[in-house]
Image 1 (cartoon, rainbow, N blue to C red):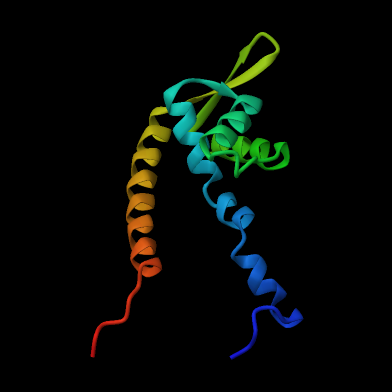
Image 2: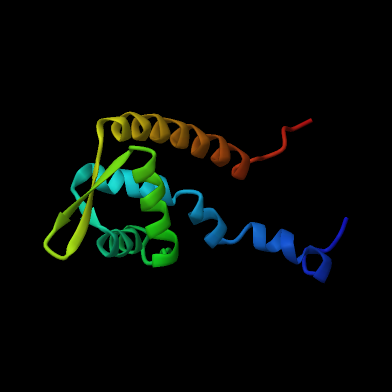
Length: 122
């Protein structure tokens, strides 16, 4: 078995970092947060950072494209509030969010089972 510290496995080590893990949850986080109240992009970044115990600080370069994609899918709408653009969840977004939360919770339970793995006594 190869040593994970060798240069040939650098890509494998990068696969398991928090940045990669968080990027998969960004759209879900945005949908969840704007389901509670309309928010602008900077407020979303600050709230994700706060809720993650300051372990995840999404960049504008990831948040704003995600907002654009969610908007193009009809899951959120953008409203102008003075100089700010705030985002609100649509009814289609509510349906997708409910489904995504359920699937994510099931996935977390499955992963927890793997992380807690103990071999059976033989």
